[in-house]
Image (cartoon, rainbow, N blue to C red; front, side):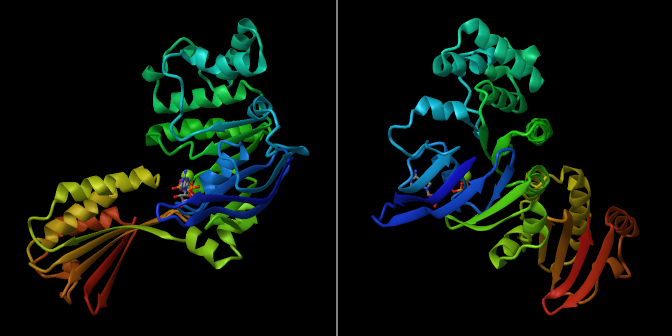
Length: 361
Ligand SMILES: Nc1ncnc2c1ncn2[C@@H]1O[C@H](COP(=O)(O)OP(=O)(O)OP(=O)(O)O)[C@@H](O)[C@H]1O
Ligand SMILES: [Mg+2]
């Protein structure tokens, strides 16, 4: 269905040099494929989507859709916009139009369908994303999840062959992520061809039939999600999917901003979808800091999370100390009980830097 060859996009940098945001990309996508696209920031994921639907004109290469060359300057833009829809991180709804107005506008303007017919089609799409009830509401009074579902309905109203999603979940409150994921999963089940850029690794793994890993503007690895996430062939892919996300705090004085640390831990848990672990992590950190406050040694706290296997741990390094704070004679037994109760497992290790405790969550 989509045939991309030699796709290249160069951007001029402030210092006059050229940056290869896309470097000679070849890609073939069949109808009905759901392709998740992962890669670190700046790897070219958005540029790939934006050149695919000609929001950015590629510097070189060709894009064919069912044999039609959309990179041809004479290719009609309205035809492209009918065939390929795009959903953005920031919803991009028209704020002065109702939900129904947003969803029914493009079919009238681009496809020349009359208003009544366009609104009937829009209602059908709003039903699909469970928003029929909100048809006459203004976008500003919708939640983020509802706005993003409206944006998806707006795409669907054009009856596109392909939908491109650029981080569709990233601007959502954690409570809204599920409803938008649900709609995307439904479309996948119905056989919609979709390319989804996401930094949510679980979602990239679960929703897709195929995953691309991009690095420096190139497709470094292309395979089934199972292959890419569980048996990557390429070392760069492996490093990316297995990377451990970490938060580190070095506490050297009593003036340390405890509340700022707690809010950073809170945000970290939300960002990596482990809100359910937030309480246990905060309690262990808090109780441990209380225990350690008796001693004057510096403390290093790390919260580590592997997105791939959803393993989370808190690592506490009590610098310069050789005895585990949990095993001292004068320890507060109640605090230790709480800490032990909160962790799945605790490991103690004597390191050259001090005693290191690892709490699995
Ligand atoms: N309009 C632009 N002008 C100049 N450079 C750009 C432009 N758009 C993107 N770039 C550069 O191209 C490279 C690829 O950017 P792109 O936005 O595609 O990355 P990305 O993989 O989507 O990253 P992120 O995960 O942060 O969204 C980056 O180095 C970026 O700075
Ligand atoms: Mg991007």
